[in-house]
Length: 219
Image (tube, rainbow, N blue to C red; front, side):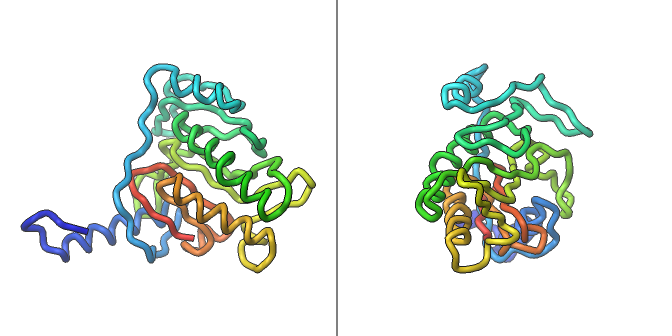
């Protein structure tokens, strides 16, 4: 990374270290990251109802929420409650509309193809543990969950009734492990931050996917 003229490299190293400490805590972790984070650009809200129209045209099952959504001092603009895409969700999730568009792409472009390739079936239900939640990271930064730009995924249920659960099947040499690992790795191409079981103890049972201001893939 090229630092501005006159800025000592050691100060750049300190800045990166501080950024990493906050990112690993995206879901409440206090463990140090091993990868270097870089700046990313969060998705910009579409003018007017363009984002909502796009979700509808893609077949996403959702409900627009009153604007803005305010919980515990956190405010979410362009919020939607999503129930399903090409796969259902175990429960509705509240996220920003731009985030919902990326999650929909993730299901169509990454999750379903990986299920067909490794498991010879399709994903029927995605099990998620939450989107918009008003909280800080353990490092004191505002979590991307508090902006509606993050979602946590802990498992997948297939059309044939089988399940691939990150807590149980991430490690190993079987088809479910290969499916989960491919989903995790390819998620890094769509989301800005992807944290999985290899990131720290707090992510041992789920994938944290977000569209915040940093770019990091730690699985």
